[in-house]
Amino acid sequence: MSHQPFEQWILDDSQPLSTEENSLLNNHIGQCSDCSQLQEQWNHVEEMLIQAPVKHAPEGFTARWQQTFLAKKATQQKLNGKRFIHFLIFGSFTSLLMYLSLSILSGSPARFIMSFLRSSSVLALRISKLNMLYHSIQSYLPPAIPIILLILLSCSLILMLSIWGITFWKYSIKGVILNEDYQ
Image (cartoon, rainbow, N blue to C red; front, side, top):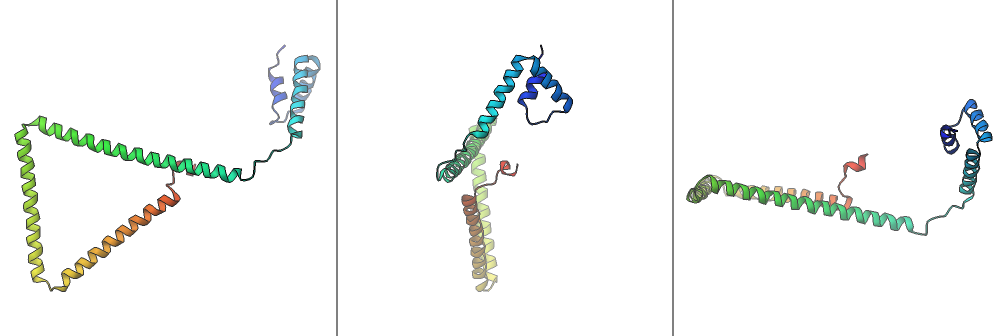
């Protein structure tokens, strides 16, 4: 005898049965001792669940659980941040090594040293030209203008550092919003 739809009907209370299905189930339970026993046991389990007392969590459990959860989440975020920084450092170091090895292998070491020295001397010359340009412009300007420019540069630097500090403070207090939080 097939028990398949009847066992499912007995154990699944989420969908109500139609009158036809209900009469088929009652006829089957009257003929099948296995399904009749299953029905009695399931009714007994439902009664036990209804009569079982509700056990409340100990005092302060929710607060302790939330603190532990938040601490674990913060630790995980810090760990992810450290892993990302380590990945960036490793990637940068690997890229630098690959660049240096390709530069050395593609030509002679003497050519590499010569190009490094040439680049260094060009950089030094450009810095000296900028210094000469600054002094020539400064000689034409009134003495108050460089001081005003220095004050403006200092204020903008302080403003950028303040914004940077506030941003880090905000993310350290509130944390970073992950995509999981939006779902």
